[in-house]
Image (cartoon, rainbow, N blue to C red; front, side, top):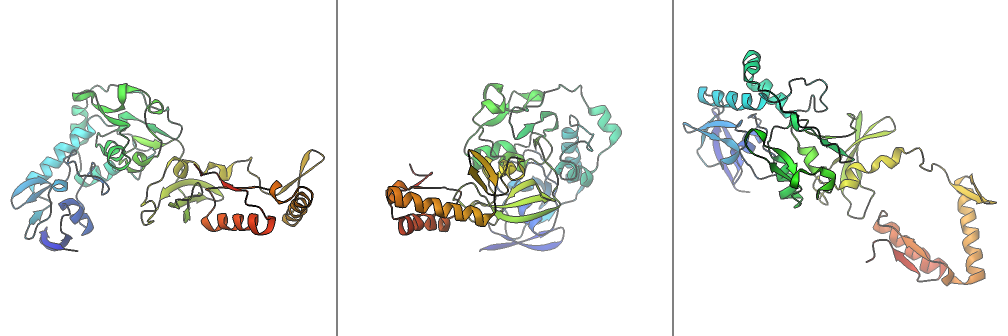
Length: 348
C-alpha cells in the first residue's frame, strides 16, 4: 500500500495514500472532534467540528486528502473559535439532560462537548423556543427522536450509500430541517427494511433501539437465520440476550446485519421455546428424554418405510442449517430411507 508522510502537531505521521486527513489523524491516535464522519461513508463535512489548520489555512479535515509534506495544526486560535461556534449552533437546540438518554456514555456529542467545552450561560442565551417534533415510534425495533438529532446526515448516507434504499432524507428547510420519510409518513409506512444500520451509526440518541441493555459480556457467533453466515457478537446478561452487533472482520457481512440478525434473536429467551423433546401419546404431548425421542423416531420411520415403501418418506431442509447439516440430511434421505424426495425451503 502506498503511503504518504505528513506532520500533525509537530509529529511526523504516516498515512495511506488517498485517505482523508481526519481518518489519518484518528489512526495516528490524534483526536479531532467530529459528528458527521463515519469511516464507512463518504465524508460530508456537515458538522464543521473537525476544522484544522493546514499550512496556515483553516480547512475541514474530513474533506482534505492527505499529501506528502502537509503541516497540520489541530489547535490554533482560529480553529478553536470555529469549533466552539459550530458546537454552540448544535447545542442551541439540543436537550441538555443526558442522564435519561439511552446514548448516555456512548454519545459522540458528549465527547465533542467535553473536548471543545462550552459556556453554560451563553448557551442559555442562545437557546430558542423549541418546536417539539413528536418521536416516531412506529417501527417495532427502533425509535426516531428528532429533538436529539444533530442533522449529521449519517443515517441518510447509510441508507443511501450502504443499503441503497433511501428511505429517509433531509426534509423541510431552514430552522425546520429534520430527518424524515417521503411525505412525512411514519417510518413503518416507508421503504425502510428495519435493518438498523442507521441506528448503530447514529452518534447521538436520535435513533435508538426500543429495548437495549449494556451487555455484561459478548461472544462471537454466526447468525442462525440463513446460509449467508453473517458474523455477529451477541451480548448477554446471565442467560438473556441483550444486544447484537455485526462483526466487522467477518468477510460475509463486514459488520452489516439484516433485521432478523439484528433484532430477531428474541426467540432464544421466549417462554414458549421448547427446552426438551416431546412425544405425542393419545393425542397429547408429554416430555421425554433424548434417547426416548430418538428411539421413537427410528421406530416410526422404520414402520413407515416397511409398510408404505421408501417414497412415502420426504425430507424438507432449512436455510438455517449449515451446508454440512443439509448434506447429512439428504445423505440420510437417499442412503438410509432410500428415496430422492428431498426439498429445501430456499428453492425457487
